[in-house]
Structure formats: structure tokens, C-alpha cells
Image (tube, rainbow, N blue to C red; front, side):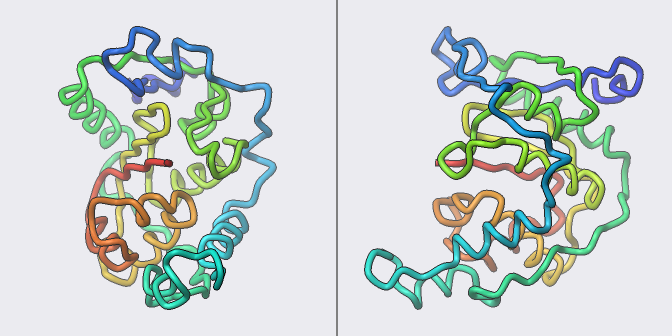
Length: 225
């Protein structure tokens, strides 16, 4: 599917539903898409977005923070509140399109109920904005900001958007981090992009534990509460 994109101009998205037993196939069949409310990914600086989100999510509220100052800083150790900057780019070991196609086949094997969407867009990142997907709306209503970051990951890590659900996003990754230091920096970007991956993940709720999990991983999955 992905290899045909340069010729067709149509980006394939596997469309997952909030409830596979719901015939409405939210949000795709229920009209919960808002393309007219999105800006352009080109109008946003991905590094600036990640730094700003990091500052917001690591800020300590002494009165209302259930984690407390020490607990909140422990989540993002060893960086604490200090934004470490973006991870370095990596050369792709395999074709990003091949990685995307392989991941798509594996995703379909687990979720036979998903639908295929074809979006006129230059990339998977821009396809999310074009369709008006609003998965991260509890954090920001403008999907173009998230698309800007994913566009950067497309170039730096050979990432490709493969599947998207009501509030979930699944990327293939041709060049994942392979060292502890690289993984920590990528994990910091993921925390800014989607803090619920760490705050509410199934692994221990720390950046270091999350970093261990993504070393060498050829898929990145995100979920916003």
C-alpha cells in the first residue's frame, strides 16, 4: 500500500474504531472529524512544540499535584524539568515504506475489523490533519501541531503513520534508537508528544523504563486519555 503513494498521491490509513462492536466506527463513521478547525503542519516548529509541551508537563504544582514535586521529577529523570533537546537523526537500516507495509500487515492480523482510508496527502503526518483527526484533543485541539512533530520523525527516524483510532496512533519506525542515551532522548520527545504513554502506561511510570522498551522497537504506539 505505502509503496503506491508516490504514484497515487493517496496515503493509506488503517482506521481503527473506539469500539469494534459499534457499527458507527467512531470517529470515522460518526462524523467526529474536524478538518476545517486544523491549521497547517508547516506553520509549526516541531522542536519548539516539544520543548513547550515538556515544560508544561514537567511543571510542579505544589498544591494540586497528586504526584508531588519529587514524584513528578522522578517520572522524567534523569532530565527532571530540563528539556534535553531533540534526539539525533538516524540513518534508516530498511526502507521506511517496507517497514510500514510489514507493520500494516501485522496490525491487520490483530484487528481484522479495521477499515482502509485513502487520504490525498503528501505524507501520513499530513493525512492526520487533512482528515481532521482529533485524538489528542484533551491536550490540544489542533492536530497540525502533532503532524508537524510526526513530519520531523518521518525524516529523522523513517517513521510512517500506519494506523489511527479514536485516540490512538500507530507508527512504523525504520530507524529506532539503538542505545540507552538515544532512547532516553526519544522517550523525552514521546513524553512531550503524548505524556499518557508514560503517565498511564502499562510499564513503570518513568521515562527510563519507557526508554528501555523502545530501544530497537520498529513501532511506536500512542494513546491519549
